[in-house]
Length: 114
Length: 115
Image (cartoon, rainbow over all chains, first blue to last red):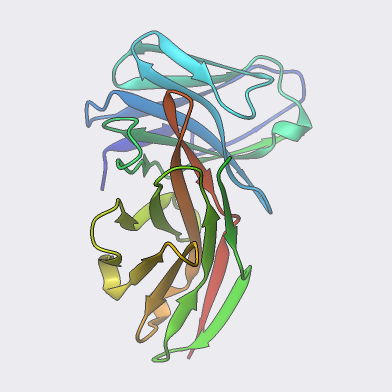
């Protein structure tokens, strides 16, 4: 299995609080991604990174920010959490962004916002 | 624009019988296609991938899929289901949107295996 660790694995917090999720990889892959998974929607891309300090938006980026200060770490921040951001969040990595390269996923973070 | 349709949201089979999970796609370019499996409380694990080589692709755990361009399909099959195959399965297409490649996920098919 790809060396991807997500932390925390579970979190419950209140509306309006800031939340940071961490993704750590040991594969030295250049590309990292954050997705959210919701029933009936499959996985949707929030943000991705193509190198240290290089990030871009995905299809559902509103309300989220990311940072990547080291190759191995990719942080997802909810500046002021809302109930609509209750979801399961997955980090993924890939060697390249070419279409033939699969992405490898972490085990997810289950986030509940009350 | 690319899209993926998994034709069944839920498939139920008996142990030892064949599995068929159906996936249709649309793509403006020559796509790459993937099948992932997700067990409860786990991330997505790659089962197999098609990247314009052989149209019949073999994956892990006895699964295989056939790319049929004329039918725009990439159905996943397994000759004999095992209890451990019970999970959710996602069909994914990778296409080139602008200067980057984008993954589009199907909404998933939940496979139930009955003893």
